[in-house]
Image (cartoon, rainbow, N blue to C red):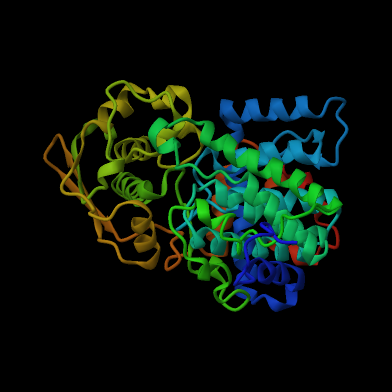
Length: 460
C-alpha cells in the first residue's frame, strides 16, 4: 500500500533508492570513493571532538547521560567515554558534528554531520565490520545528495534521509521496510525555511543531533512494520509537495554510477560558514607568511566580499553561529589565531577587544553578486571570482594574498597526509597523542577490521 492509496503513482523513485541501498556492496564502490569516505570519517570525528571544548557540547553530553541513567548502553559518548543508549550517543555526536561549522558543505547542506556519527555509532552498536561502515557511509551520502537536490526544504531536513540510508544499509531489512522508513522520515522532515539565518541561534547545532537521534527510532519503528507509508518520494501528496521547488528526476539520477560525494562535497578547512572559508584562508596565510603583529594593522581590504556575510559588531558576539557567519570576524580571528580550533568560539575570544577592533577594520571593495544556494553551487563548480585580501599596516607596508578557493574544495582536495595533520590539530586538546594516532590508523585501515566497534575506543 502506498503513502496515499487514493493517488496513482507514475514513478518508482522510492523503490529504486531502497534497491540501491539493499544491493550496494563494498566491492561495487571505486577505491577513490572509499578513500574519500575514510577521510570524511576522519574529518567529521576530528571536528566533532574539537567541539567538546565548547559549553553547548558539554550540555549535550550531560543531556545524553540523563537519557541513559545507570550508565548502561551499547554506544560510546565521544570525548567522554561513558556508555549510553544508541539514541543518546547519536544526539550528542550529531550535535558535535555541526557545532564548529567545520565539517563539510554540499550544495544542499552538511551531510557528514548526520551520515558519519550515524554510521560510526550504529557500527559500534551492531558490531559491523569496517567495510560495512564505509559502505553505509557511501550509501548515506549518495541518497542524501539526491533527495536534497530533488526539492528544497531546510538543510537539516535532508539529514534525516542520509541518516536513514546509513541505518537501513547496516540493519539490512527488506526493501519494503526500507520504503516504510523513508515514509516515516518524510512525515517527520523539517520543512520550514532555515530559521537560523534569521535568528543566528546556536540551536541549529542541536537540530543535527535531533535528526541523528530520531532516525534510530524511525528505523526501529519501520522494522516492526507499518501500513500506508511507502513510496513517499513518488506520491504527489508526500515529500515533494512541501518543498520549495520540485526536480524529482534527481532522486535516482545516475544512482550507483556517479558518486556525488566526489564532486559535490566541499570539505571545510576552517571552523566557519562555507561563504567565509576562503577569507579565513587568506587571513591565516597572510599573517603566517609575513609574521606581522595584527595590532599594527591599519586596515584590511577584501575584494570582493559576500554582502550577506559581511557584518560587524561593536561589542563582539554572544552567538557562535553569528560569529561563524561573519567574514570580518573570521578574518580578524584567523590573524590572531591562525591555528584554528574551539578557541575561535570561546566567549572570551568572541568578545576579545583586539579581535573586535580588527574586525571593524575589515572593509569590502565590492561584493560577489551570486547569493543563496546558487552561490554554493557555483562555488563547488568553480564558477566564482578570485578573492583578494590587502592588509595595510600602520607603517605603510602593504601585504596582498589571493585565492580562488581554499584547501578542501573538490578541485583542491586535501591529501591523506593533510587530512591526518588536520585531525591532529583538531584533537590535540581532547585526545592523548597515543589515542590520536590510534584513531588515525584505525580510520585509514577500516576495511581490515571485522568489528568496527574498536574505533570509538580511541575517541575519548
